[in-house]
Image (cartoon, rainbow, N blue to C red; front, side):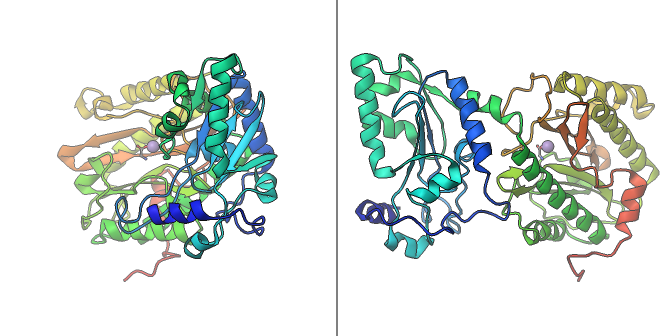
Length: 446
Ligand code: GLY
Ligand code: MN
């Protein structure tokens, strides 16, 4: 890290990068109109207050992640700029009222021998982001100092608060070194941005749609491949092969492939067990596409046939899920949907879980928001409005029987109700059994 920083510090500002220097994922760039709309909405929320949004830094290869220096941009920074450049900063209302200023590390040919071409300050950055004022990262400390001095003498913009994102770069430490007078005014920018990120624009929805499609195909392949004796890690490898073969760059979260007793462990992610005839397998996975992740769970019998007992529990979970999905429309809350799913389980448990409802074995929440984070930002109290995306994922877990069932789908709220982003992936037990009779398409079984 020191070596690279020294190279960058010694570097000169080079001519604008060639058009390929911001190498997008297969998802392509976030369109500048979306970025401009998001920043305008954020500026509205700021109401004149300054905001400082820093991009992520690169993990240190030696000390932080031994095998891998993979870089993922900070979500808040990506949301507002669409840029994957490390150590970039975005200032709003700082260089002047209403001003949006982007800082990118200057290009450095020696460093680029290691990293490949990086997007530097120049017209290409403006074209990608729609931000006219793009400056060298070397100007950042000077501009922050000027801002702090100006506030010190005339109260600056008149607002006492400075909103600061909390990405991977240690912004607060940098600010207290460069502009210590600001540190007393800092407030997190995250809650303001969370309100915006909760309602997805069309570019975000198209990313989620593709993430859902890739994840669904990986589910299908896992079901096609499943057979008693296959290991959890073989299923996991097949799933992640499909993700990558379809261009997804990362997992949205560690893949959960839990068979038999592991089907009852909510976040089991070791994938070490060999399946046996009669097991149920819970597969809870999400491909990330262009910074947006799906989150989809299916449960299937490894031998291709649900037992009567497994099917009864499965159908109870499915019925609860369907009741909640059918209730999705603007104005309802996650709390309302949870009540609907739990009422369904109360009314349909019969004697499946003894004399009491199976609800006591539904041990987690029904829903969470979905987006750049698998458990995306935003208050769970919010009423649904069009553009929100949430999971609906009831489950019943019976450890004494090594029997866990979870079914999870990704739902987009629309003007009139909902769209099931994962609607192409079978949920009905009979349809799952039929899918399991198909031959694998991506993986050749050993
Ligand atoms: N997919 C894991 C979770 O929602 O917690
Ligand atoms: Mn989930």
